[in-house]
Every structure is written in C-alpha cells, then in structure tokens.
Image (cartoon, rainbow, N blue to C red; front, side, top):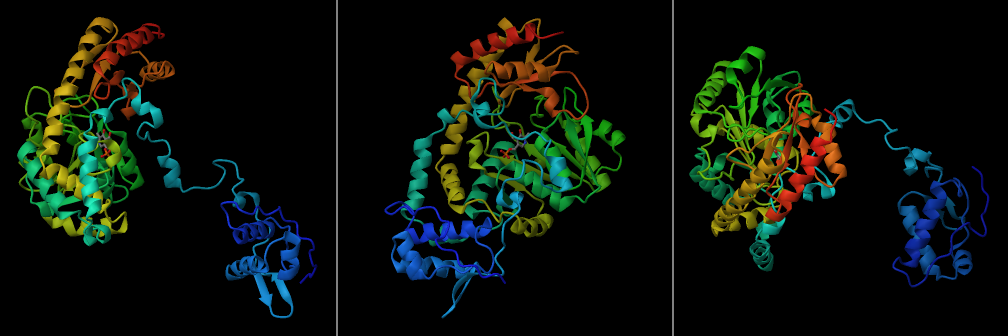
Length: 490
Ligand SMILES: Cc1ncc(COP(=O)(O)O)c(C=O)c1O
C-alpha cells in the first residue's frame, strides 16, 4: 500500500462564519479530494494538530472532520500511526458516477423507455395559458375557507392524524364521499368500498395492477385519455382501441373488435375528450358484456360534476348490481389538480386485494389533507363551491361558444358537451391539428390537438379549455386561434 504523506493538503480555503460549519467544510473538502483521486488509498493525512495549524482552525474541528470520514469508511485512524485514506475508499469515480454523464446515456428499463413517449399533464405555465383544457380556475377556489380548515386541523392536531395513514383512506372522508356521490351521481356503495387515492391517475394504476395480467387486453376509448393507456402499458397490458362515436363507447363494436378483452375503460358520463354521453342502452349492454366475459368495467368519472342546465348524470356503476364496475373519481377538477385526491369505489369482494397492493405503493395520501377535505364536504363548502363553479364555468362555456360562432365559423365546428370544462373545435379532414396546436402554442395559446389522444387516425380537432379563463380573455383568444387556423396550410 503506498504511503505518501501529503503536506500541505490540496484543499480549498475554509470560510469561517458562513452557513456551513468549519468541520463540515473540511469533511466535504477531504471527501471530495478522496472521491476525485487527489487523495489516494493509503495516503497519510497530516496529524490533526498540523492540519489545524495549516488551516487556521481549532484541532477539535479537524478531529470532528476525521471522525466523520472514519465513520463513513473513507479513512482509518490508528493510534500512533495517524490517519490514512482507507484501502476501502472508492477512489476516483468514473465521470458518470459523479453525475457528469450525458443526459439519456445511461440505461433505463425497457418499460420506462416505452412509457417515456406517453403524453403527461401539461407542464408549467402551459396550464395557465388561454384555451388549455381541463383546468379549473384556481382564482375562483375559496382559499380562505380551505386555509381555515387546514389551520384548524393544525392548531389542535389529533395524534392519529399525524401518525396513522389508513390504507383505504381517512374514514370521515370516505363517508362524505359515499354520501355526496350517492346523492349526486347515484353511485351505489357503502363507505367501506371507498379507497381514497392520490388522484384518479393513481386509482387507474391500482386497478390495472390488481385486475390485469401482462398480455391481457384492456379496451380503451379512441380518442381517449392518454394517462389510461400509459398505466396499462406500465402493467404490460395491451391497450385495445375502440373508436367512439357521438354516443361514446359502443359495446357491440367493442366486443366484435376485441372478443377476448378483460376490461373496458370508459368515460360514460362525459367521454374524454369528445364530450359524448353514453345512453342507457349502451350502458346496460356494456354491463351485460362484463358479466358474460367475467370482465371488468372501469368508469372514469373525471369531470361530470359540472353539468350545465341539468343535474349531473347518474353513474354507470349504480346500474351494475352484479358489481363488475370499478368507479374512479377525482377532486382534481372540482377542487384543484395539485390536491392529488381521488377515490375508487371497489366491489367489496375485491377490497382486500386492492388494499394489499395499495399498501405496497404509497400507503395513502396525507391524512391531514384528507381530514381538511372531509371538513370541506361536511360543512357544505364543497356543494356551494360546485354550484358557484357551475355558474361561472357555464358562463364561460357560453362565451366560448359565442366567440367560436363569430370567429371559427367556416374553419371548425365547435361543440361543447353538456358537462365538463372544454369544448372541441372539429377541423376539416386533412387539417393537421398538431401543427395548428404547435402554431397556437408559439402565439401563447394552449389548445390541445385531438390527435394527441388518438391511437388510430381520425378526424382532427382541438380541445379548447374555457373553465380557467375569465370571460374577457376568451374572445381575443378565439380570434387569435381563428387567424392561426386560417393561416395554416390546407
Ligand atoms: C379523463 C381523465 N381521467 C383521469 C384524469 C386524472 O385525473 P387526476 O388528476 O385525478 O389524476 C384526467 C386528468 O386530466 C382525465 O382527463
């Protein structure tokens, strides 16, 4: 083992009086010198007295730094023979282990590479831009009520809220969800069947893990929600596209296309993204299909709280007495997306399997947040917020349709379902919706191209979000979009 004493050591000057204590500065400097090879294995360090003199620090500072390095195995200290760089110290690290590798150069799993291409939620300021779809208005959220409820919980926190994270969720929230959605959407369940999840995206992931095996086929609406297809692929499941029409998912067509499918993932109340509503006959036919095939229906009820001019539609789940439906709901649109709270309604014989898998994932969303949400519902604030947003978004929907009538006539057919937070501008066949959306993005708008939600080619279109836009921003945005569509190559 080489034994070369290093004196003085190649260390940067220490900075007294800074945020980082001197002993930590010295420890970090020596550790860095070992990791980049300036101090090789076997090198003797100066005595603590000599080094303290060299660095103008106290001897205790040096001893503390040496002890820290010894505890992590970088140096060995022997009484009488001084301190040496350990033979077990890692030596100079390859550049990539020091974080210097080129982006993307290192290996990730085949699964991660396959998933990298799926569209995720819009990022950063994209969500705030005019016409971005699916965004509730954060300025209209009753922050004062919410902060009061959170503060009350924090002022007198029950120990259990700080310690427990029940896998199925906070019991009073599960009760409030069962009560509210039983009343408003005819969801048929007891609170015991509810599992609170971190948004419906996680709920869908849980469903795929629990009910499907790699190689199974799961039917998805086309166009449909990209997050669905992503979680299916992550589970090794084959997403089986079923084209939707003006009435949403067609179970007869689906069965013909995919006779061995194990699951149908649907948005019956407000098809995403076309806005179609699945009529009763199709709902019953889908339930019948599930029973005949021992298959599952997943009802993703993502934004139907906002129904304009009529009460919300009853959920498909409430029609399925045979319990082959898993209902998935979210507070992302009715509250705010970063809340990350949603829920599953699971047939009771599947609960144990769901909870066992759930325990291995994130365990549960933060209990205090769930408690505040339960309070928000119990105090009637959720219902009054929904009513206010329904009025506000209804006005914005009308403003958007009126603007589209003025500016988009002849360029696109703009329709908005009775529910939800976006409209669709259907473009003529041959138009390139992605290129138009890109051009709109360069001009500060954020409509989403329908093509991004398709597995198979189909009529182009743009999703136009209106819920987060004050009415006076809608007309200028639609006028600008009309100019972009008119100027696009046809
Ligand atoms: C159809 C659909 N399902 C599920 C989700 C996921 O919602 P969450 O924020 O609860 O994960 C979205 C989000 O936009 C959606 O559009």
